[in-house]
Image 1 (cartoon, helix red, strand yellow):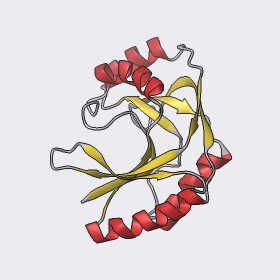
Image 2 (tube, one colour):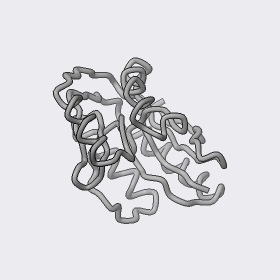
Image 3 (tube, rainbow, N blue to C red):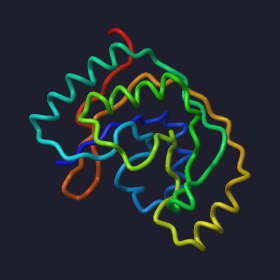
Length: 170
């Protein structure tokens, strides 16, 4: 079974992101807009219960923090992904590091770049056209993050919440 850990931003930011995703992201129908804290990994249901305990502990020791996005960027030439760049704060970086340390830290292929994907699996030409028209778009969004989620993947490849973790002492 596949699991992952994400932050779902506010409905306001999700609506903005989805205005792009519905055109440029084939995963639009599979998962809401999100910031990935732990990439998809295989685990058993029993493992997930242990992970949830660890995540609950991490959440209780992490205060809510600010998430700010100000521009559209791209991972090209590594891959043709276009995204809302999220400012990397100490709180966000620490949360990512702690979660990955606690949940069987396999070395990830890429460094942690906080982002919310708006387009992926684009051809080189599509990427150039779309990113060319979007990269000057001004985005000025800031919100407080108060929770993160452990997700699991269903048979139809969509993702759903296994458990939600509120930040800070309850």
